[in-house]
Image (cartoon, rainbow, N blue to C red; front, side, top):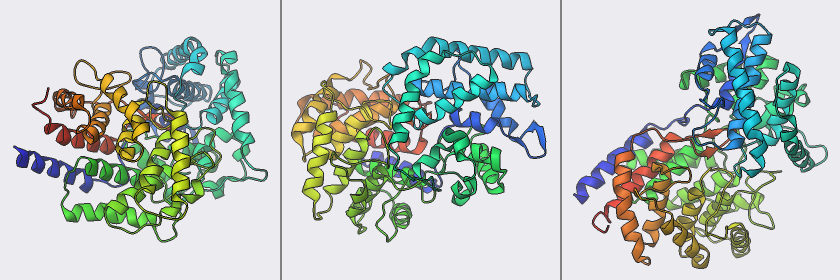
Length: 504
């Protein structure tokens, strides 16, 4: 049985790695709304991507909103504002639509009603989407111009956050192609005019963002931007991803999950994936971003790639993390308002792999940051994922044996949080969150007698749920689902939980 299980896991892992390219992600409503409003050059009544508008019209939820299945308000509000401003703008410009105008107006009204009901609760939603404080004020300005009826007072704090964000930029700062701030180019509105040619990067995108690139194309009619968007639309049958490409993120997280699961991958396929990451890392020691080209380096991708390469025997200079060092841990990107818990967890993951001057001071800074950010119940929240199970389980995997006093409360929280059906999940039990919990508890099962039973109870849920639709839990400008990353985590968890099948 063990040999058969290992062979199955190896075959699935090989298929995951062999199929990787630019990254696989389910479409999101926010970015699709920006692409759906584009019209043909020279024929402003004809849509450039009518299939994107069709996807958008079909994606409205019963409550009038757009966005991911789990209702997190930053995601739903940003997506809904992007959708209703797009639809209202197309109606005002008398663009040819595949749906009756009155039906489209009804969808706009339903979106307005959702905003009236839910926008007052924004302050209680902890999962702020990327660039929310930049893009939403621009969408609100457009909504006013379009005559939409929205709860304007409820959005007052967003303007305050925008001012706080802009105050972090040094005097004389200017956007550049690939910069994190260019990823939210649509949030700059008129301030981006005059600099558009310098903001489009390799491959035609603006920092790997379809929405930012759509904003750029609407003003520049740049042929390479149009080609990039056409490729994004084709990948999602009209809907577009939150970010593309994201090959470095996909390769690194898939390889890391497979390693945690103890899954041996055929050398040829494994070597190809490692070489892809090594090539992205390069010789300059500057770290890596979410993709081989485009968006600038960040601490999270740099840390995980470093850990994966070290494990594979590829020499790296972990000092590539140095530019992200702050007195209190590590920043993921320059000028960010809120640091990432998971990026700091992963920084420790990489730092403990290789000695270098100043490592102990850096680890101490991370320890202090994570101790401060841990919630009283023992878990963490993170800016990149809408579930506390992700950062908390990553902490148990990455920090076990390094800081047991930090991890112990998280393990107890994990054990207490299993649902009756054997799953874990913040909104409801999911295969993804259950996989993270299994990875974590497998690391500590020898020291926690209750872990074996929890792992045994998780296995039937995972076996039943694998292959079914999964919710979008990762945080970008909208909530998104990176398919292969989650598949790798579930595959690892299935293998790990098999050893405890009789312990329930």
